[in-house]
Image (cartoon, rainbow, N blue to C red; front, top):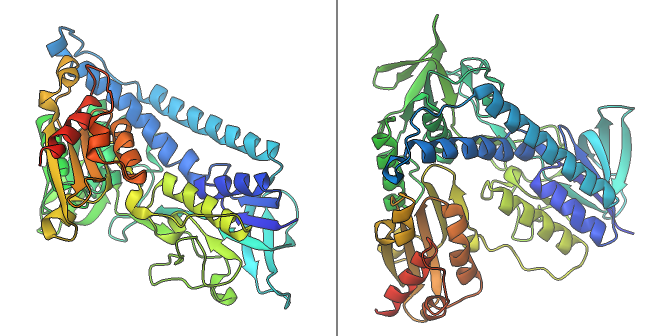
Length: 461
């Protein structure tokens, strides 16, 4: 029986543990905070739960065109945050029970690699449980899945009260009167959107010419326009030099000397990998200059038998990618047939309102000539379902290879884009042609009908 040790219980770790148990391995999973890791307890699950509540408020506040007058609807921050914490805890407990039922030895604590005693392909770990005495164990396969931590700035010291990371927001008793969000990437844009919907004044500091500068330009600009229309103060071409507490709140100083005053500041400037204190250097495992653990397409590190998955690898910080990396690592390690991960097929979504989802080739790839593709953009303003629910902002954009007509990628910006990207991702993964997508029956009226309509327009080229 193969012995598998997994350090970290987030999506990469717990999905890998379930696969290993299914394949008959003796599995030990070591997690410091709780089953599901930070993703479930303080990142993805809490943030999307909070955003779900904010999206309901947006739909209510913007329903006047439907003949419904509900401008008075407000959020109860204590109730919202209480639900956020409750659902995260429940999800963690569900994952823990699933692991135990599968036969995984779930240890709450920390672990590190130790230089082995000369055994071939056997790895030794030192485990420090939260309860009980430290002990050593051996494993044939080790998976490092320790995730990442919000990056902070020395010029903006986080105190958890007025200057915060995104993991500290749910401890607030009241909604910020004026939230200054430093960083307009995915995380910054999501929280700026959510708190604006909740009723907070929001200033978003963006160092580039638009919010979410790494996303599709037309889609990001659409989201940015909606932000401004709803009253957000978006400061493009601005960079925060410092953030400090004041008697009544905070002030954020920009690099041009401008000072913005608010009640709270949220620092969203990326993440740093949790790769310290794992014994990596002594063990000979390569770590790059940023602390990430480089891996190949089956999640191997440079040391045989040691794999890594999830945010600690620096490969697409998405729960879906982390989970797939973890599964692939175990399939490969235990000798199962495995397909290397295809990052070009990864569907991603930004949970702003409107949402922004994408998969496959990009507009930048097409415009630069990197790929030989054609594309079409179909605004939701022409979609009957979008008109009925009065959510016409955004569009479906579809790309196809000129040589074959196979769907190469797409972008959706609009309400429920996270759901609408799936048929496009399926077409990319299964190499469907635009004709095959176009000939698929869709519901009328539906937002998904725009995907088939975009495919029909691509057939006309």
